[in-house]
Image 1: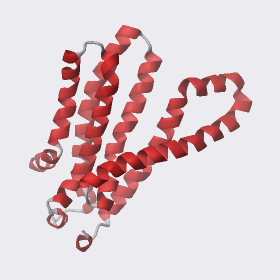
Image 2: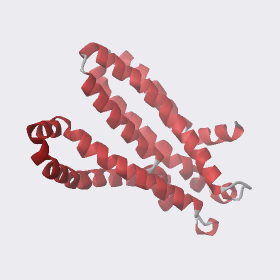
Image 3: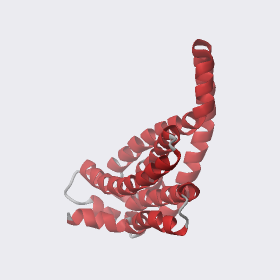
Image 4: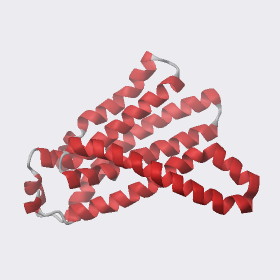
Length: 219
């Protein structure tokens, strides 16, 4: 438990910002649809900050050498940090679900709600994958924060263009108007969701590999 709190202190500030922004936004404006995008934007930025800080704190205070010299396997150290980060990402996401539920009760558009929950969850995965990878490579949390935003945006834009073109080319002929309508209605799921999921999976395994093989003398 003490190890958990040690890791939690590194990312506590953005975590509490994420917890507090939902009730604060409701107090400011009772219209949840108006506050949905600002809340989500702040949550995503705070998630990336946490993802960068979970390893960046060790580099910033020059404690990585001492951290890696513990008599524990690297994979256990990785899992501990990811467990704390995952907890701090999951709790605000669960709270955010209540916002989506309230919006559903008001507008009764369950497809809209499911789409936003799916995309919101994928953007949270950036904190668990891209942000740690950028921090482990750059060893500077502030630089890693901007690198995470830039690299994720560029990848999604470039890959989504290719993906959507290929899917439409392959599926439109066999499924006809239904597929075309699906693409038009939910192209943001294809444009953002699928490439972002792939990007997060690749970055997660690269980050884990980089941490396990991190040389103390190379910090």
